[in-house]
Length: 295
Image (cartoon, rainbow, N blue to C red; front, side):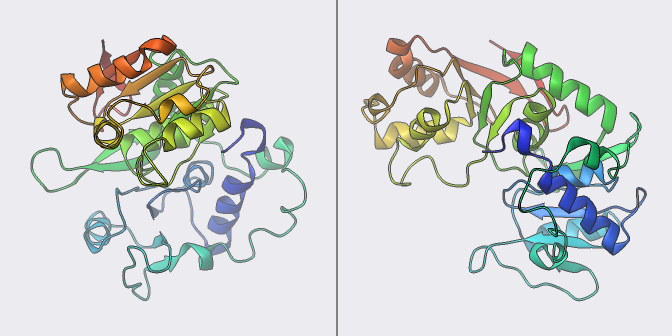
C-alpha cells in the first residue's frame, strides 16, 4: 500500500540519488523494474524514465539503442537476474546508498519536498514507454509531463469513477502502461491510495488472493487483465473462494490489457452478481497511456 499522505519518501530518495550521481533534466535515465514504488522519483527529479515489462538483456539492448547512458537495475536475488555491465548498469540498492539519512523516523513534510524537487514544465518529456505491437520490435512511445498527468488524473474520475480518498488496485506490472499510468501516477495524482501487488492471482496461496487484498485494504476499484481472471476461473470455477471475503467496499472490476473473451467477462459478472458489482471491459493502448473506450 502507498497511502496518499505518506508517499513522499521514495520519490525524495530517488531524487537525492539523482542529485548524488549528477543526473540532470536533459539526461535520459532508464529505470528497469519488475515492480515496486520507485518510478515517481524519476518524474520529480527531472530525469527520463524508460520502464520495461521485465528485467532482461533485450531491455538493456533497447535502452542502448535509445541513447541511454545508465541503467538503474532493480532485481531480486535469484529472480530474473542479469549481468550488470560496468560503466552503465547500477543496482538499485547501490544507487540508493546514503539517500535515506534522516528519513526513517518521520514522514517527509511537503514543504521539504517541494523545496528540493524540480518543477516540470507541461511539454517536458516525462517518460518513454515501450510497446512492440505486432512487430516484435519494441518502439518507444513518448509521453510529455502535462498531457500525461492531465489524462491520468482525468481518467481516474471519468473512466473509473474514483474520488480522492478511494483505494485503487491495478494488478499490473508497473512497467506496463496500466501499471505505469494507474499504479505509479494516476491514482496518486487524484488523491487515491494505491495497492501494489507483486504476485500471481492464483497459488499465493490460492485463487482468492485478489479478493483477500480487496477485503484487507478496503479496495474500491479493482483492475486486472483477463488472463488473471481466466486463471482464477480455472482454479475456482464457482467463485467459492471469493465468498470468504468481505467485498462490501468494492464498487467495480475493470478488465483490459488484452482481448477479453466473452465467457471470461460473463464469469466475472456471474460470480459478482450477488454483490451487485459490475465487471467492465474497456480498451486502451500503450500509445494512448489512458483508456480510450469502454462498455
